[in-house]
Image 1 (cartoon, one colour):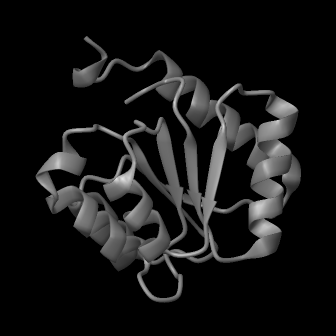
Image 2: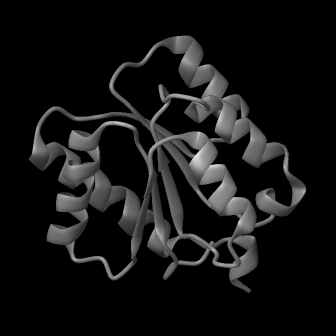
Length: 140
């Protein structure tokens, strides 16, 4: 985990991407953001980049490769798994099986997207502040 690395947002909804970016702008985190429309785009980036991202925010329901399948691919890829990138799900809907599936693949969080901008801002701030303070095996 690179605390100064890119924040990855995998989200197919343009309005949600806009809201995320507004929150990051208001909170003034120095991390650059990279947005991906689906899991395939994100996977290709993560496999090809030499950059070490800070954190991944992923929707579940996306075209081509959904968030759960992407997480599975990242979790089972030895090289990508060693990067220790926190992987958090943000979804509009939630059901018990999706949460079980997410945590069975070692996701570090599962959040329901808040309806209100202020709630999203508060949630993102708590998450980023937590991971900025957290130690990871590759921080040494």
